[in-house]
Length: 137
Image (cartoon, rainbow, N blue to C red; front, side, top):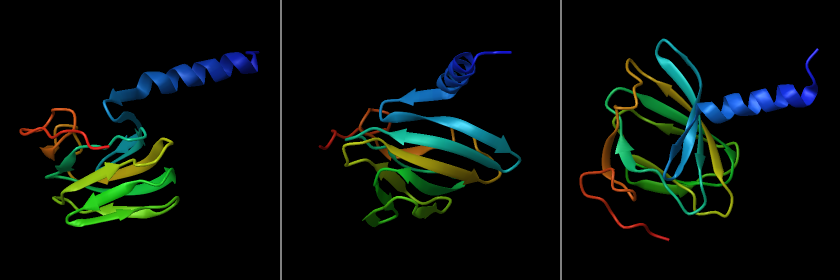
């Protein structure tokens, strides 16, 4: 029988290997099936994802830690713990963490194509858009 600490270490290493690092934090794929994908996003304090939209998918975000600021279209607002945000297909959107602790989001993507290359960036703090912007504090 395997020791409990060995089981915990294996689980931790599996989780760590699935985590994809980005300049703003990162994400991990939780589950994927035909027409849907579930991710866990972590946005570090003072960071934000690019202002982006998707041609083939819509997203739904559930806040599980922190209190992010979201921009959907022209509407910017603060979102609290356990709130849900709908991001329609084709809508410009951004997720920001103005707080002192990491923001954790469960993201459910749905649509006919869910590849990472279905991202059109308009503005990005890390130089990944056509015209990069300067980071704002």
